Figure: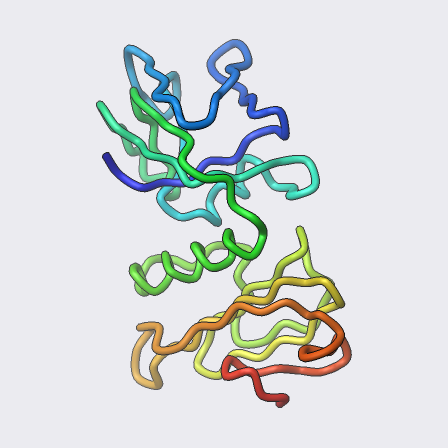
Length: 185
């Protein structure tokens, strides 16, 4: 079994083949074959890659899943198809960001996902979160935003420091730029 991530409609349905499949929490579901283009249960190793398929946190939910059985990879991103899947845990936005940062830390040399900002982010967040990666990441975000930052080593892409926080209007203010260590820039 491998750890992966999957996005769903809010009712835990997903498009599958020519129809819609209803998933259930904490149960193994099985399919006879897995091919990323045709069949099987689709999920991603990188949580952020789920946003290519279910892109809106207001209309979707995201889970940590167990993928098992035959596993097929097509190299498109970290998407896989498997013959067995189990929904393990529904992720909050903060947990989703934290899992995404951990994936970047574990795979620092893989291509960075399209939602990750390079070095700085000074814009409205998409989906209630903002992720910044760089040598000295900095972020300014609206109130309520979950911010994730990953700091790279000066001489490589290895992640040496990470943080996740919420712009709460008390400790983290919406009109301030913050660094990975939580200090104002």
